[in-house]
Image 1 (cartoon, rainbow, N blue to C red):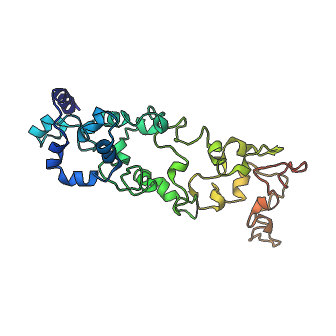
Image 2 (cartoon, helix red, strand yellow):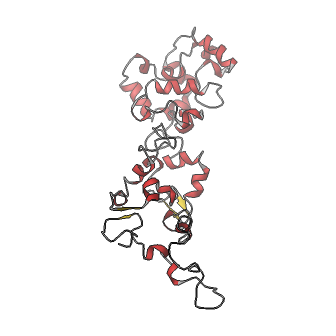
Image 3 (cartoon, one colour):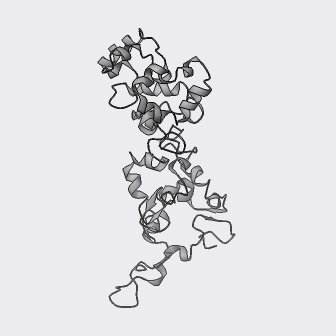
Length: 291
């Protein structure tokens, strides 16, 4: 950090040398960069003098680097090995990319965790269809850090993300939001209701755990139980409903002395075979979510 601080002071005396000086040495990098949206914008339709400098618009003036090419600290780098602080890298990006989807970036969990823009994006090459991501898709980019979520999506019951019917950004805003998990809504339930409107209500008879949080019963990404449930029915229901007026041996009754087989009433949909409207009911006689 001290070395970069010294170099940053030196950069203040550096001057701009122009794009041609950069591409003379960095021909291969320039070939990849030429296919990107940044290159087209900076070269064909720059909005101001800064964008017209192309390479030096992001990396800073290059006269000192041209004299000492081996000293990588004389330019603003965008890799973890460059020695440039994350705050400096991100500040360069946010000079143009501020507001909008990034309005909540300051203080977000990614910002607090020292995630750099270049950890997810590669503005120097076109690896993805849009967004200049480091990987070919949003999902693969997120998987680079979120290995636990990758494993959850491989469980037998999961959100249709591996099938390509949705992506991480359908639920999360990686650039920041008003929630710690970077949700695309003000609350978890509000996010789920975007697709599951039939669960929103209002209901005449509400199920309290549903109103509180969908994750009281469901996993967000994937589960080895049906419908992304946190545990199998009837065990999930019995976490709150220990003995709701049913026989205490309901789980093991089989009509035999040993009770070796479960009762037929707890097979398949289990409690929901009778309590079908478990998310809420509007029937006058649906106090127990039967209808």
